[in-house]
Length: 69
Ligand SMILES: [Zn+2]
Ligand SMILES: [Zn+2]
Image (cartoon, rainbow, N blue to C red; front, side, top):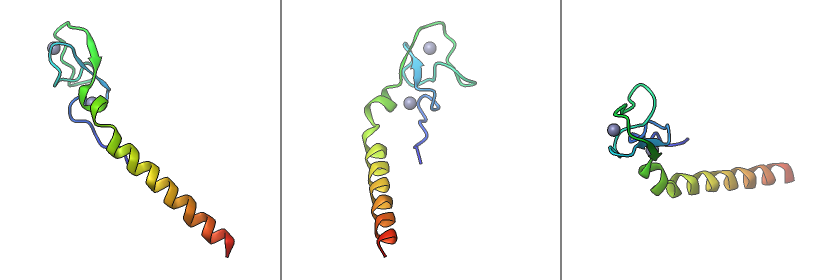
């Protein structure tokens, strides 16, 4: 399960001048500045990604064992 990003509300974009506000959506900044990639999503994606890969490998292994019996 993907972690919800509080910073950009999972839009992936934040306001260029207000990096803690989402650029779009109902909580969008709307100050007129350009949108930039969310620094939170960008700099912290490794932990959830790694765990999902591990989960996938464990599931594959379990399936392999089950079908071998
Ligand atoms: Zn703004
Ligand atoms: Zn984000």
